[in-house]
Length: 381
Image 1 (cartoon, helix red, strand yellow):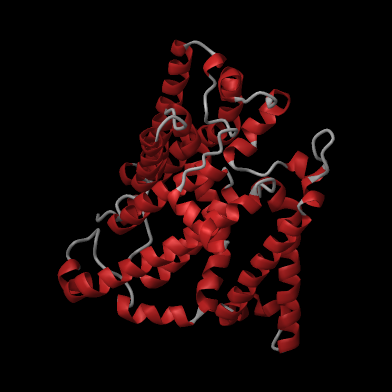
Image 2 (tube, rainbow, N blue to C red):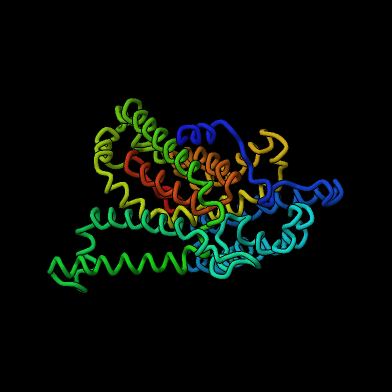
């Protein structure tokens, strides 16, 4: 059963057509639909240009001007991308992308579920004639909490010494006090997830459906990164010295062959993954929840594989370019961005995608001898 589910994930396309990406022919005239698609396409690239300007302005501006530009351009951009854009798009697109029966909760769907987010109203209260999702899917919530707790245990083991250096003043030298401190930290983190994080970040109504995608992404990412490790070992490590003069592709840290030892230390991978879940979610909120959604409406993704591919390629290109000038990360993020968008358009669940992203990013960091920094700070002066 599990193998069949994985096989289906790799061999079939099952777009979530009721998630605001399939246009209704009766929703407007062909010219109106065409205008809507162009709006989504142009907005996506215009906002990406703004993102790049905010990221790279420090290369041309001094520190005070950089801060001023980021304040004047970045804050309105964030406000538009994450708050205003779905509200404005809903106003003009609801008759095009909402399916019959969704009109009653259309604005809520546009703002939360269609972007892969949790819905705090449904989480705590439920819609009319619907139980709160926290109660309906309590087993899912418990399972995710247990999984995150396992990652935090890995982090505690991996960063045992660092915990002393940073927090030792609060519990002294007694091992019992340290364990109590860590336990209290675990409880606090779980409560934050349960009452603050999950209502907004975890879409519960389809998370179980996402499990096969998560498994497929983890398996595919593991194999893909192992192959890249072998590529580094066989092809690039012998010429590491030569690559040193090639600023944007030079290798960093321990050789690829030595890094394979981390596979015998799952606590090290899990420990890094613990911190990468949230960061992976944030990245996917930007590139899948915003750019991926816009590109999926810019192209008729439900009509052909090629149209779906174009939407995924556009999102992957944006995800890749934001990692300039790090060539290796650009390669990885283009491939990961393409597959991640393909994953997202079948699930519209950012937490599932962020969880998968966190694993792949952690493993990539452990197994490849590359620099993970991006942006203007990486340019030679």
